[in-house]
Image (cartoon, rainbow, N blue to C red):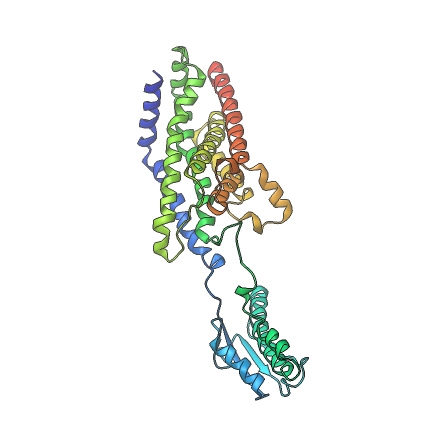
Length: 377
């Protein structure tokens, strides 16, 4: 009997083709749009600035500095009209170490870009000043001059950059795919609520109850199909991130964690989505009410949980508030897998929280469903 009930649920689910389309197509569209939209924010490509340079000093030191500007990967020398920054090397620049270069900024440029530009210019200024110091020190000490020349102003030789212990820096796809996997799994509110409400109105649940089929069996028979659908969603969206997103000139998804961790987290997240969806579906009086409440709840949980706006961009109070959203727990778990090479032990807290939330909300939905069936509601 239980297997027949599960089969019935599958037939009802796949009869609603629009809902199935929403479950799979909408998250895929979101992944592509957000990965492309955030591509430049996470790009590791070299930053390039257009500059205009006027050398009023005409000294060996100023010419050396100008040469470094010309061969730089980050600076492109153009005419004054096209330049983002105008650089003037003043007269007597090579005489005093305290003489400053004049830099003018054109148009509206973000403050963080100005700071990046200043760090690039500072590297070249430091290089030519060290070169001058080495030449002057050679008059007094060849060893001292050589020590100065050995100072390498290339930033890459001064440190080794790692992101959470990995040499790989995260890309936009690794940020957007887990977010929309989590959000997409909660879309099951659409088909599940419709089926729940229709069966209650048609007294199907009441008739099943008179056949000594327990509320637990009814609920689990509805949960199993959506558990499977959620797993299909997860792996389809992972494949989209790996193979479809790169077609839009965006980095491919890189999965650094274990498959077991992905599977365990997705099961826990699915149970959480099924639990809150069941609770809303059995509490609503109509399918329209259920989908409206469910849709608003999903948007609120997503906004609070860092789906719409990454949590690192939120103020501290909002980041603390995000911890109440199960979507946040799922997102944190996936980010640990993709970025920190996490295994199951590293995401056990997220898995336990999601399982606990899912079981509690599922039990509450069973209690409410039993009450409504007995009261004929």
